[in-house]
Image (tube, rainbow, N blue to C red; front, side):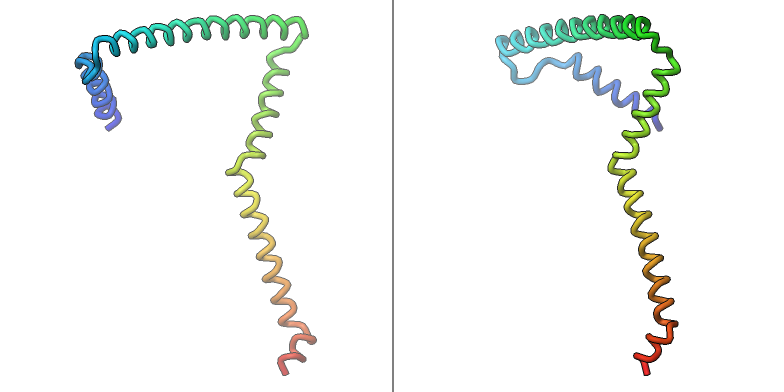
Length: 123
């Protein structure tokens, strides 16, 4: 099944690339091609800037004697914090708390129902 989806996507993409632009004037086509070229150049520039910043980051870590283990520990701590503040985790935590509270209330009500004081009210 995944192969069929890939082939369909590839076929669709290929047909769009080979098809003539619909309802575009020559000026509009030229403008879009110019915009595309600018965007592609900007993407290349951003990739180069990112690579330079990553190299600088590595240099700074070496100078600060930050090892891979320290980085891994920091990443794990940050990831665990992100999990703890995520909506899914909070919902699960809230659900568990409500469930526990519900059980405690039911248990207390059951204890009250069995108490002598409650039975005296029934009578």
